[in-house]
Length: 408
Image 1 (cartoon, helix red, strand yellow):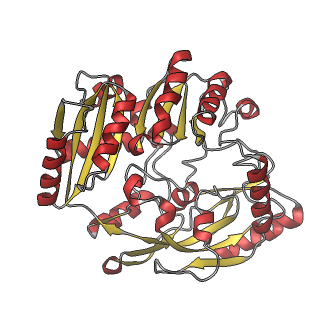
Image 2 (cartoon, one colour):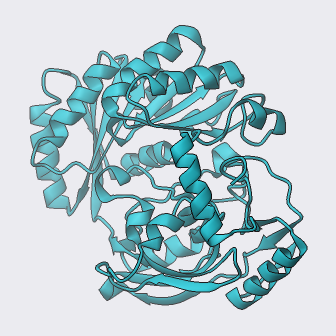
């Protein structure tokens, strides 16, 4: 384990690894070590010492901090100023059996976003700039402290979701937003997944600005205490100042979800916070046996995908992002993973990732990696593009080689 304190030290370590032909892993608090392919490295670069708030200007909605800063500290700092990270950072410690939510660098590296992504955007949309050292051992910076910074390439979008395969990041600048004064959730009973998705579309077509939408099958809804004696429950979150939330919630309740539901209810801010935390952190599937998959797909495709899988396998699921994000717990077998990706491919396409692997299907097990790639397999053209990007930043494959895809 090689612990570094700054980017100069990182550059030195990378230069030595290049000379020795070594592959190095990169980790902070290792809370997301289970995500991606299992790889064996010559050594590990520990970046957890790159922590601390560098500059915070709440009046400007700008936060600059080091990449190894724990998320607990980040959330506490912005909350004290009445602000938040708009992309609603999830804490996957329950389903990944890790020590906590990890660091801001890990969140950016994995481009993790919660339920508010549907309306507010992803983590990458709030990354204004960063300082880093590439796999060449070369220091570079991207972006700045304003949203409209168009000089050069938009490397912030590239570095988000790269899982440490391109560079070691230190100083990060993020845009913050004011925290909503309050929030409520509206519940609507639906007979099937298709009508639930159509009902959400009806609400989002209204002028009442819902902020998040999830769909809970009855067995999942009952566990959260929001069951409505119906096959599915649609959950719509409304946020903002109290008077606005009350007015908008009243209009949406009066209008319902089109012709798709008659039973409806409202839960208060305390219940809303608990429910959406469980949705955000995938706690609703935490006690399920088998693997947990994360699927991004067109909402209209979700019913067909689920129908194919439910017909063949014992599984549980729920949907976030108005049906565009499916969290699925299924058998820990390669057969299930292959069927899942086949269903996705024949119903609009998308991205399927093994998020928690417990056996033969992939993820953290070496045997599984040979069967099912944890990340969505790349087409030949996309694989070639990834190879070129990796070569541009890390030609000798020093950093996290093979973490995302074999040979990259």
